Length: 254
Image (cartoon, rainbow, N blue to C red):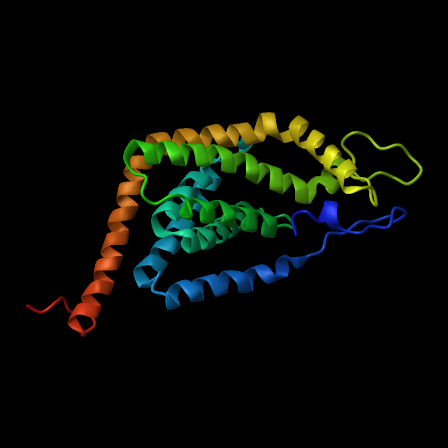
């Protein structure tokens, strides 16, 4: 879906190029992840409540940090949430955070499903990082992941919207080093895309996002991780009490 400019078979004489809107399958995919997590015991009522709270906080953070020059706070909490609650939680949190923030900032548009999907991958990737790393090593790992994910997010978002921003070569005219060329070989269009990304995004927006992720995780990460893990332990204790006692709402009998 994201790589459609490189994979779509386009008629070079076409006056209009539309992406394949496969993102219509995104909502059922989110619901399937939630259902799978609930059925496996990965999300109980408290964890679902935390999902709503973190989504709302992320939406507010995105309003406060409007993203100018890539300086936005939405990703650091997404990464920490995925780290604590797992890949499925991180995937859904990425989708719901970007959706809620788009409603608050009037950012709903054809780019939104792509933002939701790539942000979901960021949260999911945080949940797939090695679990045994702890302490300062864990913060260092999350900082490195925050930097890497910032550049990958920018790269993938540029890819899906590149033909509309950089322009499409008009038949009979020479293309620039940034233009999307309908019907051109994949390597030629890939070269144009990489030049476009380096000149317009990598050194500016993506670097700003990477710096903000690194600073937020390094400075706020330890405290936020402790808070989220305390909430996660309470949720697990609740499930354990129900299983041990055999009576909902009661603690273990001695």
